[in-house]
Image 1 (tube, helix red, strand yellow):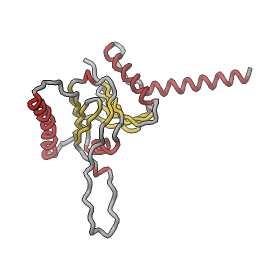
Image 2 (tube, helix red, strand yellow):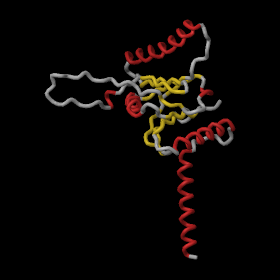
Image 3 (tube, helix red, strand yellow):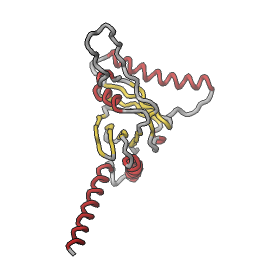
Image 4 (cartoon, helix red, strand yellow):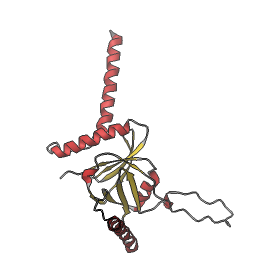
Length: 212
């Protein structure tokens, strides 16, 4: 009898731990808003699939304005989103996989240096970069340019270049096909470099969308 009671207690504790772990990945939602609950349920179902594998993935929460680096459902790093804009968010139901990581601002090798040169580090990461995914999705990561008008000008030029590229494709082909969904995310300069350092080719991205 004592053995059965002990076994039952262990099972209860395991169930409690499992339930607590799952509750951590449940995104907050408005219980009075059916659309919000539906989106939260979709995100939970997709994240359970991602968390079941030994991998690191990125969860972009456009409701709480945060980029979460996660593994096995556990938050490893959080990046606040200062502002964002996007198009065709309704097409972002399924997770995306990153096609290639951002290019590194590689240092020039000084062949005349006597001492060993430092390896690539976080400071070598770009502060503005584009992430492209399969299925089609483009995320433009911008860093906060407060007090730096030159950097603001460069970033705006990059935004307009993306638009011109899309228009040029229409002019060349004559096909008015809908452009792929896109996101513009503005974070701090340090956080932009941290994200560029973290992401790798093939990494899954899951996006939680706001509801009207």
